[in-house]
Amino acid sequence: MNEQSTRPTVAPDQYVLTLSCPDRKGIVHAVSSYLFMTGCNIEDSQQFGDHDTGLFFMRVHFSADAPVTLDKLRASFAAIGDSFQMDWQIHLAEEKMRVVLMVSKFGHCLNDLLFRARIGALPVEIAAVVSNHTDFAELVGSYDVPFHHIPVTKDNKPEAEARLLEIVREEGVELVVLARYMQVLSDDLCKQLSGRIINIHHSFLPSFKGAKPYHQAHARGVKLIGATAHYVTADLDEGPIIEQEVERVGHDVTPDQLVAIGRDVECQALARAVKWHAERRILLNGRRTVVFA
Image 1 (cartoon, rainbow, N blue to C red):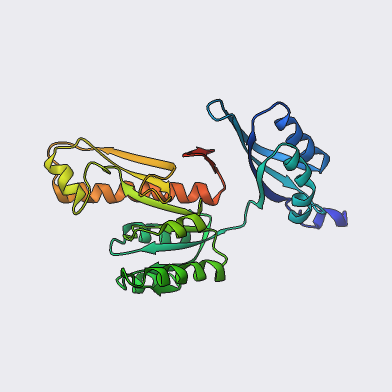
Image 2 (cartoon, rainbow, N blue to C red):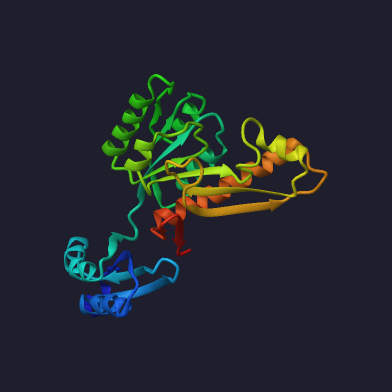
């Protein structure tokens, strides 16, 4: 028996390259030629040229054998990035993104994300859960995830947000998810974590603001309900939209049933947004997003 045939085959490392830049000729050729010359193999490639903004967006999933490493790829690609004025990143595809979840008193999105992460349906590692209440400390503990109770008042908001940023830095967190966290974040925090905070809200905004929006919607006889997942900006609930989910409802649906349906669509929209962000499928395009789903 050939001794070499008994040795296990080592799978090549998987990487993801994302980039955006002013659109011009030669971008795809430059990227594919670079990967070929570096000994890499393209597994999947998606691209989009936006005629409105004049920008080009690209996501490439590729594989490479040793001695190619992440550091070498980043160092050698820099020249191409500079020549095309690219905003680019290269990451290991199988590296789970570290995430902080934030919640207040509605736990359906929190529970959904914790479960999806546990079963491997989300490529994330939940580093911590932060809440301004203690209602879900036991639930979070059952998943062996650290729980941080950070009360927020009008007097201590700067200190509370400073503590959140401390957790983000200490835990190496790349994404903060507002899983029905019912506090308005300061402009400064939004700027510091720009493109790294995802929020979910019912799509009735701004039609039904305030308490019990689903009951307000029922009183008006709505026929469609939904949810919107978006990046957080200083403009409340007006950040770049990532994903939306809708459900048709009839005249016979009660307010409580409307709430239950609304919770389901919120969970679905938020989970997809988190998954796509963690897989580095979303690129910011001004007030919009490019999603390579």
